[in-house]
Length: 140
Length: 133
Image 1: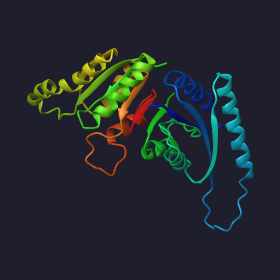
Image 2: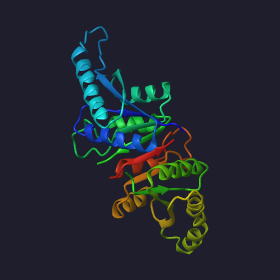
Image 3: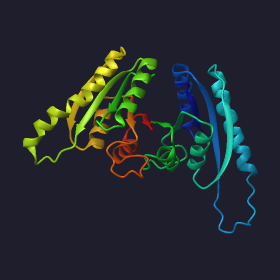
Image 4: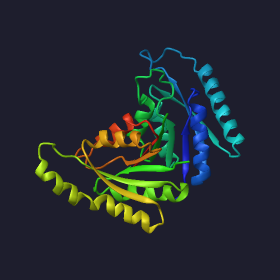
């Protein structure tokens, strides 16, 4: 089976390790590498309230470019995907994986969750529970 | 990148998919596989225990044989205790660098995408976990 690997990146301090790991993985397993970043939008109580997502979108694009550069420095290529999601970004990652036929999702157990007491962040939890393909949860 | 992978198996019909996946990974990464079956038994029922251990041995053994047939370095093992706890404990104590676990097993609740053992292992493990769907 040709691996189609989707790597979730969020700009947190674990991102570099995650990307490096994904590169090593693709070198051994073969297949393709795609980076995804989901901009989490606040879920509005008043739907007609204007929320300017542009700054977050720009930040997301920068995160993806940084990760993509790291992949290229490893001698590989990666496609990038930027999406928006109201609330937990895990749902969007799952949806994209299913829609585009990814065979494996790679992500860190704790990205943005800075609290040491949280062992498995909410995004990785959501992805692990809802993805229809295999999920590799990285630690430490 | 992975040297030693711990592969919990439970004899359920989902097991063969996980085993095939583990073997494929081992062939590509050169890692060894340890097939682990945890006998989940009430500690009070000690008479039953030896019988259970004996009859359960064939489960990880069958997996080991499949792996060996594909030139993958593998071992089989039986432990007794709470499955998730035991799996995590062993992975930490014996420094496995990957746990490959099926998302479904003996979960009676068919609505769950991830069974309770896989769920707990995912939460508590301190090494990477590959959840095979």
